[in-house]
Image 1 (cartoon, rainbow, N blue to C red):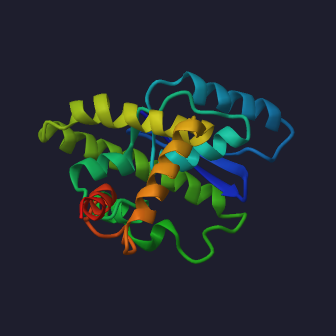
Image 2: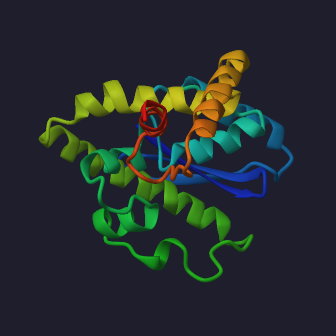
Image 3: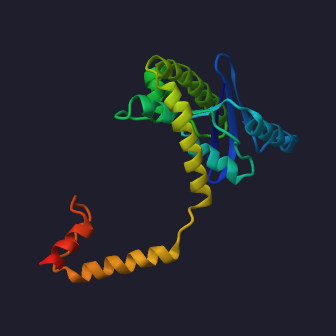
Length: 212
């Protein structure tokens, strides 16, 4: 697997880092150097062609990369989602996972880490930590017989929801209007306000009033 991580300034991604499961990581500046267009092309080929890409909170990174014309074709694993499958009650941010699995704490984001001369280093560190975290999460998923669920349900659902977020969802406006009219009619027949935060169903509230 190859883990990746981005750093961005607003909507522009200025660094992307890659890290192998066991080995060094590298951060690539996307907006500097005489060969920056060639560099972007090479990075885009990795994002489009590799079948085993891993990210932490892939929705964010993939969204930003897509905005600059470097979409990720497929994400093999998201460490945030994997940890949620294992421990839904715990935090899932990179800082928490690094402190749990890599014995790292605030070193991920110390004061001044986002300065131009340090962004590349910490970008590479974040990718390296993500790779290490995934190795350990994968072992836990296997040990608890959750890897099949994660790979065959959680990650396919991730891609469906990611595409929905990018493209939007088709809405049947006619059907929506019919529901609105029906709800308004039922509401008008009641003599009380509905509290949508209660467990009491709205249709039940209306039917109770109309039957009396």
